[in-house]
Length: 468
Image (cartoon, rainbow, N blue to C red; front, top):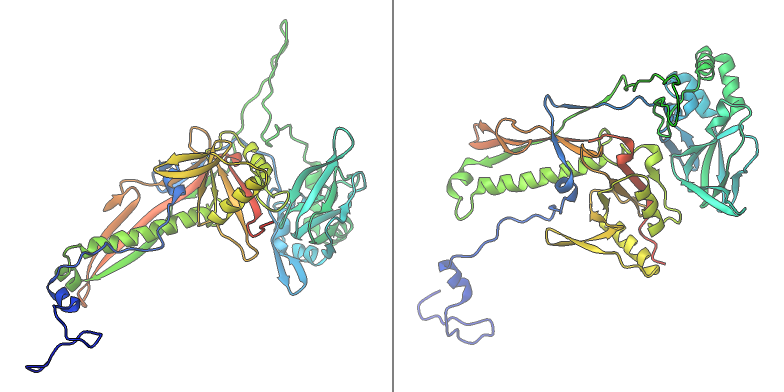
């Protein structure tokens, strides 16, 4: 600006005082620490009991169990055609541990696709069972007869389930319930006749089925464990039965998983721009936050040890009406003793609230670290945005019993690793390269283990988009 030139304000009038833009050159601004939207409450990481693992591996020893065929079947959809993945047929009890891919592929090709409408009966109580049904999509109700002759829903099946599997081994098997489509269903059907025809040509399958039919029936408890022989209520001097408790010869081992990244900071930034906040500390803080978010995501979704993929088939429930009603939550809690927490996506929690409001119910809340957490039957329902929501607006609700003492779900970590800043989380200096960039290796080791199957339950295919 030249001498004598008059400074004018935005309105065009002569400026009568120092402007804010110029004044800021002499002022010290107040700054916040770097913020990030990814940080969540991480209730699972907070509440999971953590067990230190030596040697990076945790072995879960269990009592020997004879139960087989408790998996879920996966399908491939091409246009309107649905096919079962051949190896997935090994989840059927009759084909468990059978691994001839060529034979399984032929059985897969023999599966017939059929569509059922809502309310249509798929199989009737008392009729002969000669086919196994593989449910590719939809919801099926198992309907029985109540004590007074009325219909009673025994359970609900959904995507990936199968029923009528006893037909493959027992020619005299009959339906013990009526299977009725609750929604439009896509079903693949494998007949016993097709299995026998393939077995006539495949020696390996014929021998496999022969061995299954000749294995003596084991005396087990309701959990599939070998029964312990006991004498009760006797008098005199009868012979006392001899027994022992057998262990699983191949117990599952959980190896610690890893999450890593290399943080890079230019030495000029670390040297000159550390006031009022330390740049290295802030970079590490945000990196560790992102690492923990990923850690919780893996604990929920990892196919090896994640909660959603490690829940036993008989602990997976389907909502009776699609939406998460109080009856579904009650059934989820009834499947295990001492449920300590429920995990649900925030949208699923909203859907629970809507269903409770329809019945005039108001859930109690508890204070957890200054947060009001809703409860059902005294069990807190914690939000977890790591639980996926599908394109069809469905999600899952997870129920957990926690701790080693209660044979529950535990987190696994190894404390005392080099350069540790938190248990099982380390930051190692990796040196400075030719471009004067400082590098730090940030590492977290973790996993989760389910000690007994009923410690973990999942209410699947919960509809969160229905408003009426």
